[in-house]
Amino acid sequence: MLSEMDFKEQSHLFSLLAGIAYKDEKQATKEYKSHGFTQVKFVDVDSSQAYVIWNTKDLVICCRGTEPTEFKDIAADVRCFLVRPATGQKGRVHKGFKVSVDRIWPSITSTLKLKKQKVWVCGHSLGGAMACLIGNRFHEIEDLPLVEGVFTYGEPRSGNKKFVNHSLSVPHIRWVNGADIVPKVPPDILNRYKHHGDLHYMNHWGNVRTMTYWQAVKDQWRGFWKGIVRGKINFFINHSIDRYQTNLERYKDGDERPQV
Image 1 (cartoon, rainbow, N blue to C red):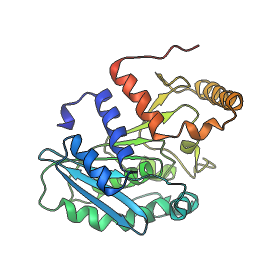
Image 2 (image 1 turned 90 degrees about the horizontal axis):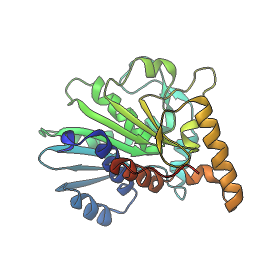
Image 3 (image 1 turned 90 degrees about the vertical axis):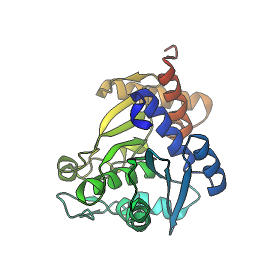
Image 4 (image 1 turned 180 degrees about the vertical axis):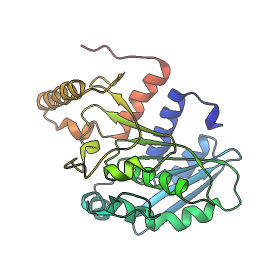
């Protein structure tokens, strides 16, 4: 039962579930079942995708993130107009992310009918932004169950300041890995885009630390320099769900990397 896990265990497990969402239905079903989920439903509507997985205790909505080979995923990421949320509450949200959720929303809500499990939502990258908006919808619509928690990894900003301040009472754990560039988009100009959720940060070495302005600057330069030395752009390497999973597995096990 997910609610019986501690925070470190939950953070690691949901990173695994978010990563499995990138896989094809056959492989994903096999892996989700290996984690104790007996039922798996794949939702795919015009390239907006998620898995809904459940057992007798828990139901998890695992939103699929950005795939560079899918043009519509990229279009959703850059279509950064602000529009009103689907439930009509205060503020505005990223149009591309809202449209992605709109496509899969009927299939998600129909799956929930007559179910009594505790509901969770997770996602990486674009999937993290979708998870944030889905969690908000659950708390805005009275006949839907409350969400136990939203876990996101490398999530871009999904709404403006007013939306963030007046939405999503569900617990939202937002993980950011070092020099990952995706959480910095869309840019925060004139309070147009803000993050929601409780920030949990992994530094350049993958160790969990409190994120301060100088901590972030140092980690970005460390990542940039490491990329130069290795001949790679490290900002996108840090965005990989595999990197999040590796760091969170060490965090769960109490294993810190030497910072040298």
